[in-house]
Each structure stands twice: as structure tokens, then as C-alpha cells.
Image 1 (cartoon, chains in turn purple, cyan):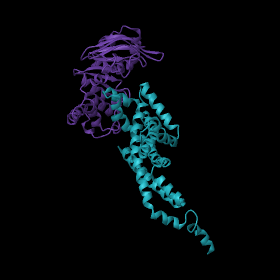
Image 2: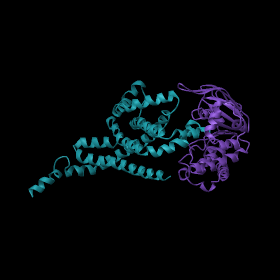
Image 3: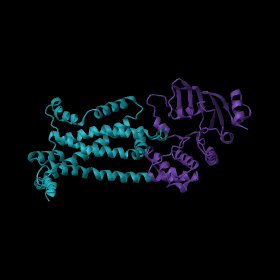
Image 4: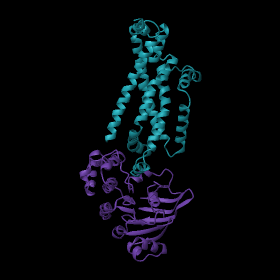
Length: 241
Length: 235
């Protein structure tokens, strides 16, 4: 479903991603862990070309996004992203946030998009907020709307870029529960997170990034019980106690 | 008594004397016709300025270099030369470059103020777009919106609230600036007033009424946009 070959990203003189090779099969739930500045957000943002790699290949659903005139916008319709800062459209109601892109971008009829939007809002427990504006909701509720917005594109892939990092502690759980609920679906999911409990519970596979390289790659059991790298052990000892 | 007479003396003679007023109101339809031309040039010019300004404002926020450079050149050229000279050039130079091309004075007026204020509006639009967080564009792009689609549905509607006050400024200035076509016999309110007043020396009353005419065109616009601003703030 996703294949990265030799992906490097430079920001000026900073080498954010160093020759990354990564293959994610359909349906996999991949959790990406790493200290801040390790390149995990950059990695996930390269998959939908919000960040264009300096070199390498990014192949999503059979399309090479680094090719000249690659149909990036078309592929993005299949690859939904949930952002750390929610990024809901503040001038649109909750319902419009969820139904806008299917109508405008995918050409779904308004009735159909509204119906499916309400279904997904129900699924994230917010159907009663449909008429409100994002600013009237709590952070946790906004992020759940953002997840409903992502789902209403009927994506094959979902990218979560630290979805709970901007939330108050008591709201993290409500968002994680929604994401864990999704993990039982067939959608391929990549989640950048610091929530180790989530990684243990929902991931099929965990990769650990340090300084732009993948230094650990395996099942959650492998990652938490038997990490290979000293850097990983050090990280885990700090974060798990 | 003589004191009072001296004080109201300005109604008997001088630039604001009563006979001048009566002469003006006897010929008021001249000013009315001029005002209609001004309204026509201003409304078409405003449509053109808004369209140009939005397009060029969006171009100047593009991540591609060519449209950004084109927008920059356009804005700098029109912002940094006097409107008066631009209109003069449109009127006199184009027929030299393109002999036989006849452009009606009203069209020149529309293009003159449209292109000039388009440059200012482009800067207003650019500032408005740049005030919207990067996350909004990223969210829209991540959903498969094109750059233009993201601008149209996500960024510009939000920027609108911010740019409404400076945009009103531009619209009001545009209306007043239509008066430059008076120099090319535009037939507008300023021209009508000027030529009427010049013929008999009735400058005082004429300029008061002409000034009032511009005020009546600009003031409702200011009121209307303030209402609009209040309404969009509620949403």
C-alpha cells in the first residue's frame, strides 16, 4: 500500500530523514515512535506530499508521487490525515467540515455526503454537535470531528500526526478510543504518537525513529520487551515508568 | 445691523452668492448625468479591481516563483506610479501603439481605476491570506483540494473577515479616484461639475454639491460593509 525507497529530506542544512526504506502492507496499523526532532512527523508528511522529499521514491497505492506530474491531489483523496492541531475549518459548521471535501473534491452529492457525515459523527459520538462551529467544541471534540472528516473521504490510508499531543490529559482517552475503534477496520493506519499504551494495544508494528533513521522495526512485543538498540532502551526507560 | 449684513454678505456676492446657487439648481441635471457616469465607472471599476486583486493576491502567495514574480511586478508598477499618468497613457499612448483602436473614455476609466486599485486590493488580499494559519491550507490540500480550490473554499472565506475593512477603504478611494477621468473629458461628476462651474465661475456651490455627491456614493458603502463585518463576526 505504501512504499518508501531511499527517502531523504533536507531542511536547509538539517538532514531530517536519512535514506528511509519502509514498506507498509494494506491494513497494517503502524505506530511511529521517536524523540522529538527525530523526523517522525516529516516521515508521515512525506506520504501525502505535504512535505516533498529531497530524494527517493514514495509509492502510495501503486502511484509514484515523486514522478513528474504525479496525480498527488487524486492520491490525497485516498489518504486522510489527522493533524496535531486539528485544523478544522473554523468558518464551517461541524457538519460542513465533515462533508465539504467529499462534495467539492470528490463530487459526491450533498445528500449523500451529509448522510455519511452524520454517520461518522455518530461513530465519534458527536452527532449532536453537527450544527455547531469548531470554536464551540473542546479540543477532544474537535479532534474527533477531524477524525470524522478524515473518515468521510472513505480513505484507504489514514495518517495521524500526534493526534493527542495538543490535548488536555483528560481528553486524550476519548480520542484514543476512537482511533482504537478504527484499528479493527481494514484501513491502513500510520500513527505518530507518544502514547505507549496505544501502541501496545492497537499497533501491529512499531518503528522507532532516531535522528532521521529507523533504528527499530518490529511487533509491539518486540519493541517493548526486547528492543535491540541502546538508544531505544534509553528512550523507553525514560518514557515507561 | 450693518454687522449682520456684512456677515451674510457672502450670500450676496462672492463664490457662494445666492444667484450662483439658483443657477446651479436650474442646471442640476448636468450634475445628475455626471453622477450616473461616475456610478457606472465606479461599479464596473470595482468589479474589475476585485477580480484582478483577488487573482493577483492569490498569485503572490503561490509557492511557484513565476506567478509570484508576475504579481510583484504588477503591484509595484501600479502602486508606485500616479493614477493620473496611467490614465493619461491609456488615453494617449495606446492609440499610438495600436493605431485605429478606439477606446471609449468610460472604458478607459474602468480600466484605469480597476487596474490601479486592483494592485492595492492584491496587497490587501495577500496580507489576508497570509494571516490564515498554514494548517488550514495543509488540511485542505491533504483532503485533495487543488491550490485554487483550497483558496476558494477554505482560505479566502476566512481571509474575507480580516480584509473587509481595508477593502472598503479601497472601494471608497476607487469611487473618488474615478474623478481622474475628468482630465480626458470623461463626462463624470467631477468633469460635469468642473465644466459647468468654469463656464460661469459658479465654483462654490458646484463643488459643495459635487462633494456631497461623492459623499452620498461612498458613505452607504462604508455603512454596508460595517454591517457585513458585524455579521461575519457572529459566524
